[in-house]
Image 1 (cartoon, rainbow, N blue to C red):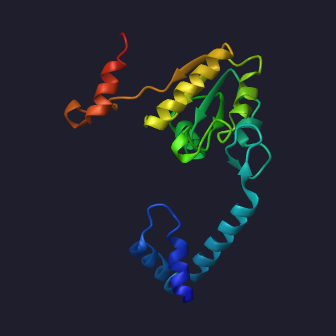
Image 2: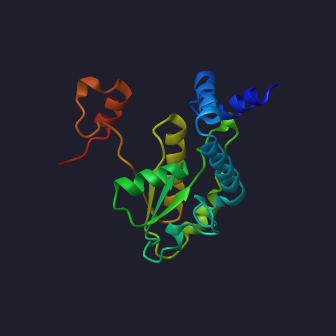
Image 3: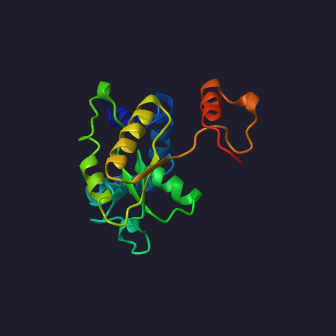
Length: 195
């Protein structure tokens, strides 16, 4: 294999990058932006070597503890459980949430061999055992595995005497019913609330 082919193959490890996109990116880096390509390679290598999991919430960080966990203004009164570190970025930019997070790095899926120990739920139990924790906010996806994980987490919180809540799912703000898929509409209808 040539170096060009190796680079195209390497670029395809990124999600959503197929052979054509990898080819276009490869030739761009080699022909038009070699310094950008070198910087990209160095940055990726440095990040892979230095970024790990926060010892408290399991998000990705360069330090032993992430900025959110290290912030004394963030309280353990509420703990929001998410599937990925990217979910934290979305919640932080869209909400005024001021509690703590816990990242599962997946969801319960016996078919894929993902059980409670793989999600490090023992760390979550330890986090919830803090005296001030009152609410576990479950922000997993609405897939079958996400719902299963949510039910498991709710049961776990209930056993610890902590209120468990779930993010609402359903009709998006500004959405017309005719454009909503049937399963989303059915879930929204079944989960309707009193005004």
